[in-house]
Amino acid sequence: MENESLKNLAIKELLLQLADDDFIHAYRGSEWLGLAPHIEEDVASSSIAQDTMGHAVIYYKLLEEIGEGTADWLAHDRQAHERRNAIILEAANGPGHYMKDPDYDWAFAVVRNYFYTQAKAIRIQSLQSSSYAPLAEVAQKVQMELYYHLMHWKVWFVQLLGSGHKEAVSRMKTAIEKTLPDFAGIFSLGQFGEEMVEQGLIEGEAAIQKKWIDAVTPIFESVGVATTFEIGMEKGDGRNGVHTEDLKTALDTLSEVYASDKAASW
Amino acid sequence: MNVLLNEMAEQEKLKHFIARIDAGEKIEADDWMPEDYRGTLIKLISMHGISEIMGALPEKEWVPKAPTLNRKLGIMAKVQDEMGHGQLLLRVVEDLLRPFAKKREDLMQDLFNGDLKFHNVFHMEAKTWGDAGLIGWLVDGAAIISQTNMLGASYGPYSRALHRICAEEVFHAQHGEAIIMALAEGTKEQRKLVQDSIDYWWESLLLFFGPPSKKEVGSSKQDVTIRYKIRTSTNEELRQAFFSKYVKRILSLGYTIPDETLRFDEESKTWIYQQPDWSKLKVLARNEGPRSQDRLKLRRISYENNKWVREALAPKVI
Image 1 (cartoon, chains in turn red, orange):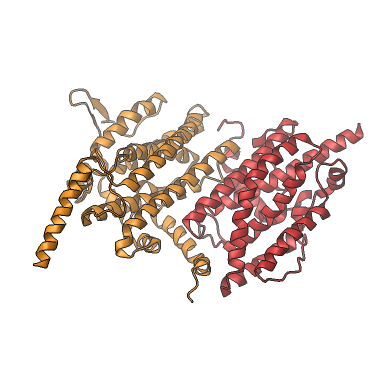
Image 2 (image 1 turned 90 degrees about the vertical axis):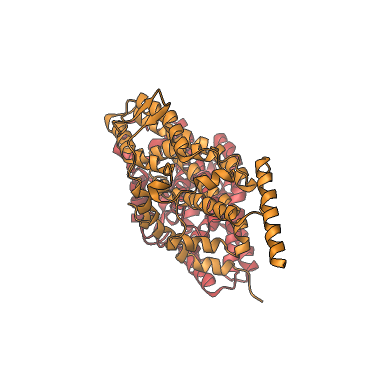
């Protein structure tokens, strides 16, 4: 009995991690709308943000099905400390607001999007053989869209880092240095991680991180940039509810209309 | 002598051109066309294209704030479509601009220095979620009326782009209508959001179709666009079609329209209405509307911030 409830808890935690990651990532993507380097990119990246929000919805619906509250409640009505997303995904796109003086950094967007999408692809690969059948099933669907997302961000990453353009290369390196120290938060499975692995829900943190390094290393090599991958979790583990002010601000925006009348039908 | 021959040839070409469009043939990008036809198309399509792009901004403000996951997905898809329309149309303009050696970059500069205008509605504020719904429902509804009028445009590339755009706009209007219906059936506060939006947007919706004739604002392109078979109906005919389609729908939801004189005159079969303040179109064309400068600033910031990206991607000079 106790084992059963522990397993349920592990399932719930994993679904929250997956949902919250994609939810906040899609939000950061949608803030870029109309501000991307060119119109073609606006079209492409807003399509990706839309797919990503769709993935968050899939996971929130799985949570709804196991009685964890409605998908809309889960997305809009949980406080920052209840969220399970990795901290690197909540970091603002740059100084300023998406409606006023957004001083956003495309290099950071490309690095974070590529790194995260690569990690997501590996995680989704692993989830396809998850012992939790509903998750294995949706992983199949998400994977089809991810193929294109990953290709998109990989092209940007290679083109900018390998451009030979002094400012571009320097900005990309700065963005990489900004992303890696918190990137372990993506691989973290949180306090119920061992249970997740034991139950066969997903592969362990170390295994996924290793696959990620194996996947991105040749990309770095292809543009002649050496890196040591000092991956950390400097700001803490978002999986356990540790978050920054950036998440609180984002949640206020995301739930502004919802919170104006929670009982209303919108 | 040569000059005369060239003159003659030009006139022959024009005659042939007019015969082609009168026969319903499509003009393609590489075909000969009179300069004022090209000029009219460039003005019309670049304004349409840039309006789609600037038009994404007021709704984008509401993308993250959409109150449910379904509404978030809906509005994300819609705004992405609008950007896609902008891209499609700018590609059409780029072909037309080739003889002048002008490019996308020049269009953006024209936007920033005020030479390239965008539609009056996109200078306005989107203050509430009600406005986000109303933009989809009535602004896109108005756009569908004016764009379906050009589906048969004599310029083939524009006509084809419009077929795709109009098909998507129908979904946008349904998306907007769904938001409005939910609010209309909701709480007192939700219902009020819609009434406030109607009151705020009504005049802009009338201005959207343009003046009935030259005398209101000093110039109008409608005669030349009709002559060249780019469109079929006049501004006033389109506005009348808008009234016929939407007045009843608005009233049937229990809302009022901020025009006490609005009525359908059975005898003349036309809608009688309070003329909007046409001078506002001039104010907006100078980018002096409530949100004109803020939205232009957003685009300018993104253009300047991403300068390094364009440079890094530019083909290397060897």
